[in-house]
Length: 281
Image (cartoon, rainbow, N blue to C red; front, side):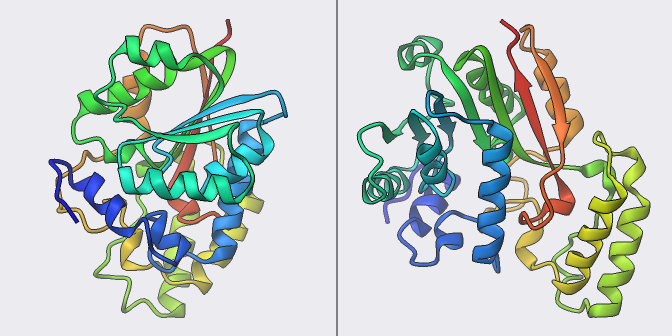
């Protein structure tokens, strides 16, 4: 594989052809097919799609979310800067019978100027899922959000998903994971439920109990750390919900936003929240 000047691009292209769907989609090691389906259902529910909706996905990868989204929408455009991943995404969209109303394009959203984004048009829905953490600086993260808003049509909805709830003080350290037995995981899960008060979203009792059971029965893998797998420490920013809210205010746009929890069963759900952004007009 030819190395580029961006390790994130290299990682995504390196795994794009894997027969293991979770690996090809750069999901945490050990992610099950059931968890992938839970993630897809959760994203579809939050996007609130109909057959007339146009959707653009920033960081579409191999189309792990793009294929189910395109099935529900009238038009789908996936954008990603990893050429091999885009090739795989288009192959999956074609195999699903979704071309030509669905396609992926090799576009580096951080290198695209506003005129280029304007040429793409405005979309009813913008999806940015498990992408923002790949920004290497605060300025790059702001450009991700700027592009999200620029692509969003009036009265549209954007989903910026899989943002870490650092406020919950969850310890997903890789060093602790291998030694964690059932009792240790139960204790960790119990401590987690007691720390939910400072989160930017309301953690309901039912949600916490379901997550407690999931956390107790499945040990967190080493890949559960938020730092992207196979990237050196410090290569990307440390992402938090507070930082995202701060960056959003710098855009100078009239927006309405709120946080929502992922559904139980979504990979890493206990440590994540999804931001839903709407443009009133």
